[in-house]
Each structure stands twice: as structure tokens, then as C-alpha cells.
Image 1 (cartoon, rainbow, N blue to C red):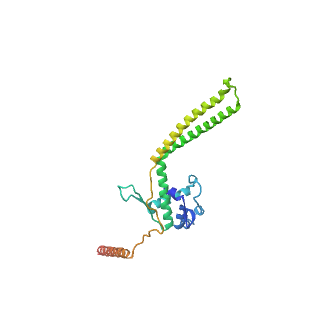
Image 2 (cartoon, rainbow, N blue to C red):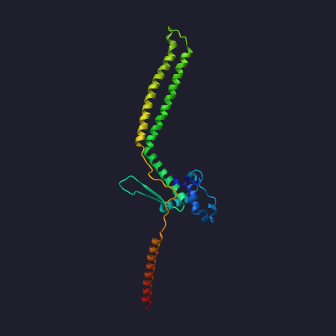
Image 3 (cartoon, rainbow, N blue to C red):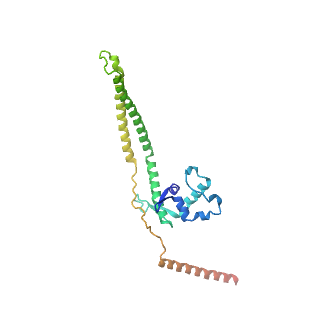
Length: 246
């Protein structure tokens, strides 16, 4: 899901850009790749199934990094079916687009997984109904053609009415089959709607995003604690070295 999201396109200040390119840019990864000629002009356009070993390797590294340091998925209340998705990034535009896209990607995958079999049934029934409708239309045209072939048929000659009667039988049969197919198709669509899970986004990221900064007071306290710890550590080490020297 992370890989698919990275390869999706987002809007940044009105300009479309792949999320993976945005991530590479704001982390200045291309500058780190300057000493590697094979990575100088690497891009991630085209079909992911045709990516080279180098492209796949970079994607794997980025996915692992995002999974560990950027993306956090949690369920605040175990009793509720609410999932919280947090994205931490120095680039708030990337954080916003990545959060929206990964939620959309996961939701789409979940719905498709849950409804795949029923979707296939609907597609098959729709194809069969279209085929029967085509036969029905052909039969109706055949009735008209047979009637036009002998517009003033002699009532005493029953043989002249046979082609038209045959076409009418075909129309009646096709009509009955088509009606049953449409009935089954509608029932299948109703079942599909029942099996489709309802997923609703409760809250979406809105700019400007929350900036997680270390407060001055909190920073001073942490600095004092760190300084005290280091001072104590220095005293202990000094005593140990003094004892060893004596």
C-alpha cells in the first residue's frame, strides 16, 4: 500500500507530481546520489512491473523508511471501528497528500477484496444479458423482415406464414430469457451493494498542519536532566579511574 501510494500523483501548489519524486526532492536524496552515475537520472515513470533492479531497490528502501519513521496507523479505541492515520514529514504538503492518498488506496483495496467475487458475478450476468438482448433485437428484426417478404400472403397458403411465426417464437423465447436475466442481474447488484463495506473518512488533514516542536520549557528541562546525567556519569568514571590508578 505504501509503494502504491508513493507511485501515485498528488497536487502540489497546483502542479501534479508523483509522491515519490516529492519525497526524494525534499529529502535531497538526489544530491546524495551524485557520486552514483547509475542513479543520476533515475525516474519512476511507466509500469512498476517493468522497473529495474535499481528502481525496485530504491522503492524498497523508501517504503521501509516511511513505514518506520513517517507513517503511523493506530486504533485509538479498541471498541470502535475507527482507525487513525498519522504522517510525520518536514514537508506539510507531502504529509497531507500522502495521508489522503494512502487512506484512499487502502480503502479501495479493502472494498475490492470484499466485493471481488460479487463484482465478477455482476460482470458475467451483465455480459449474458447483453448477449440475450442482442439475440432478441435480431429476432424482432427477423419478424419484420419475414412480414415484409410476403406482405400480401394468401391466407390459404399457411407455408407462407411459417418464417414469420418462427421469428415470433424466437422473440417470445428471447424475451422470457432476457426478463429472467435482468431479474438475476438486479438481484446480483443488490447483493453487491449489501456486501460493499461502508468506509467514511471522519477527518481529513487541512493546511496548515500541526507543527510538532519542542517547547522552550520542555527543552530546558530535558537539557537540564541530560546535563545532570552526564555530570554524574563523569564523576563516577573519575572515581573509577582514580581507584584503578591507586
